[in-house]
Image (tube, rainbow over all chains, first blue to last red; front, side, top):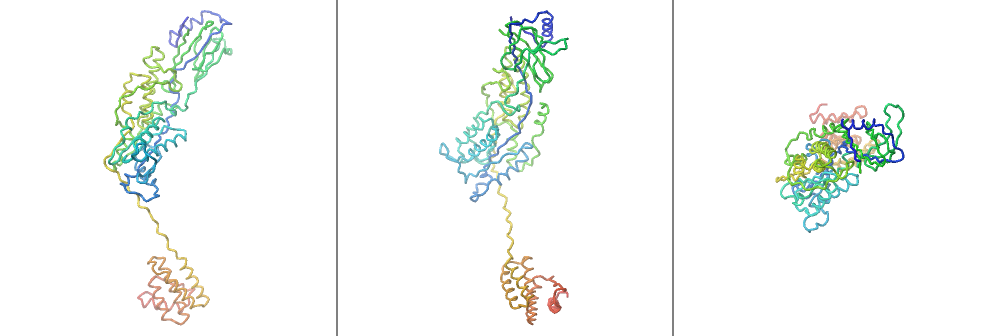
Length: 283
Length: 250
C-alpha cells in the first residue's frame, strides 16, 4: 500500500483520522523510516573579494629598462595606489610585478614570447592554494607584447579550474591572446560560500505520540537526514526532525513491513518559519 | 546570518569617487564593475547537486511536484544571491548562476546573466605611462670629525700655552675646510679656527697677524661674539678694533 500525507490541511485531517482509527501498535514486525531534507541556504557567509594584480611595469615605464636589480614593487604599488580609488571598498589586492626587459620566466612552448605574466599568475595561484583558498580573481595589466600566449592561456585555465578567473587590461599597442576569451569559467560549487564545505545534516528521531499523556516519549529509533532508513516497531509514531525549532511530523501509523519516506522542505534564510513536509509510503 | 543583511552589504556602493585623470581608471572601473564585454552562448553544464542538496539534483520541470517546488524556491533564493554578488565577485556569481540554470532550465535571467558575466578583456590603445618617482637622495652629512678633532686639540694647546702647535694644528684644519662650501657648519668651524689662531698670535705678540685672523673669523661669522667671562680683555679689545674697522658695531 502506498500512502501519502502532507502538511496541508488535507494531510492533517488524514493523520488525525489515522490517529483515531484506534489501531493498536503492532509489535514484532518492524517498519522503516527515512527522512529527506529539501533545504535552502542555512547561512550565507560571503567570502571576502580577493584580487591578485599582476602588473607589467614595462608599459608603465614606456619601455625604458630599469637599472639591473631595480625593485619593481614600488612602481607596481604606485600604480595600485591609483587604482585604490576604483577597487571595491576594503579590498587589498596582492601585487605581483614584472618587467619584460628583465624577465626570464622560462621557455615558451611555441618558442615565441616570454613566460612572464604566466609565471606570476601561477605563483599567485599557488600562494592562494597554499593558503587554503583557490578562487581568486586575477587581473593582468600589460601590453601583451612578447608574452607567450600558450603559457598565458594555460595559466589562466588553471585559475579557472581552481574557481577563479583572469581579467585582462591591455595597455597601449598589442592585443590579448584570443585563447583567453574562449576559456570557460568554472561552474563548480563555491566551497566557501556556505561557511562549510558540507552543511551539517540534522538528526531525526521516531518517538511515541504523547498527546494528552504528559509523560516522556518513548524513542523508537534515531537517524540522520539524507542517510539510511531507521527501523522501528510498527505502530503510531511521530517523526521529529531536530532542527531549530524542531519539526514534529505525524502521528503516522506505520504498518508492519512498511517503508516510509518523509520529505521536509526548509528555507531558514529566505523563508524562515515556513516548512512543508510529506510522508510517503515506499514500495 | 541573515540573507537580507548580506545582500545589503553586497549591493551597497561598490566604488568610491574617482578622478578619471588616467585612461586606466575608466578601464579598470569597467573591469572591476564587471561590465559585459563578451557575449557567449551558454554551454550545457553538468548539473551536480551541491553540498546538502538532494542528488540527483531536481529541477523545476521535475514530475515530482514536491521536488519541483523546492527547485523553484532554491533557484529564486540563489538568484537573489547571485545578483548581489555580481558587482564585487562576478566569478562567484557566475558559478551560482550556472546552478540556478540547472535548477530552473527555463530561467531567462540565468541564461542572460551567464551570457553576460565573463572575465573582462579591457583595453586602452593609449599607453599609460608612469615614471618612477624620483628617488629622494639624502645628501650625506659632511664629516667634520678630523676638523673638529684638530680644533679641539688646538684649543687644548692654547690652554697649555703651546701656541705654535696650536697655530700649526689650526692651519691643518683650515686646509681640511677648503672646498667644503659655505654651509653654516663650515663657516662656524672656520670662525672658531681663526679665533684660536688669533688668540695664539696675541699670546705670541703677533697682533697684526691676530687682527687678520679676527678679520677672517668675522668674515666667516659676522655676528661672532666671544664670551667675555672666559676671554682675556686684551683679546676682546683687539677683536673689537677689528670689528670696528670692518664697519661693525662694537
